[in-house]
Length: 296
Image (cartoon, rainbow, N blue to C red; front, side, top):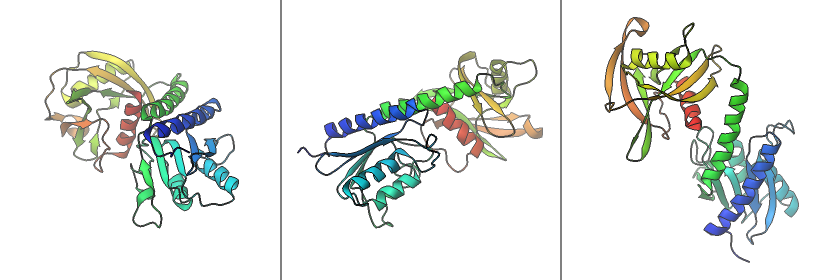
C-alpha cells in the first residue's frame, strides 16, 4: 500500500480533516477536524470538535480521534501512525500526541495564540520529553485558516451587530518587500501599543479614528477606507472599533509629543503584521493585534 509520507497523500488526508472541520461548523463548534492514519495508509479514526455539544472541555478533534483510534486497535500507543489536524494543536492535544507515540503530525494552519507545536511551545519534538515526532506544518494552510477565520468573524459580527463602540482604533498599514506592516508605538509608561482613543459624544467611530490618529501620531489621514468591525475587549466594557485609514508617505519611524497624561513622547515604528508581538507589548494591545490580523 502507498506510504502516507508524501505531499499528495498529506493533502488528501488533510482534505478529509477539513471535511471533519466542516461537520464541527455545522454544529456551531470551532471548525477543527482531525484524521489518524496507520503506517499502512488505512484510516483509524476521524473526528471534529465537540466541546460545546458534549459539554466536555477536552473534546477537541485530536483528542476524540486519539480515543477512537486507540479503541479500534486496542492499544493506547498508536506507534507508526500519522495524525492530520487542520489547526496546530494546543498544549492538551500536543501532550496527548506524545503520550500516544504518534509518529508524524501534519497540521494545516498555525495557531498564533495557543499553538503548542511550533508557535508557543515545541512539545512534539522537545528533547526534554521521551518521545518526539516528525512535524509537517502548512498543508492546505490557507483553507484551514480561512475556515476558522470566517467562523470567528461571523461570531463577532453577530455579537457586535447591536454594540456601540466606546473606543476607536485607527489601523494604518503599509507593504514593504511584500510584507504587510502595521503602525505601532512605544508608550513610555505602558509599553508597545496601537493608536486608540475614546469615541466622544456625538462623534462617529470614523471621525474618532481620524482625530486620534492626528492627536496621537501627528498623521493627517485622508479618509477611512474600510470598517474592520467591532471587538469586545473584555476590559471595563470597552468595545473597540477598528478603522482602516488611508495615509501616504509616512517615514520608517518618528516621535511625537502628545498631550496624553499631561504630555508624553511617543515613538512610532512599523511592526510586521504576521510577527509575534514581543514582551514589550501591552497585553490588551496584543489581543487587539490578533483581532486585526483576523479582520484583514
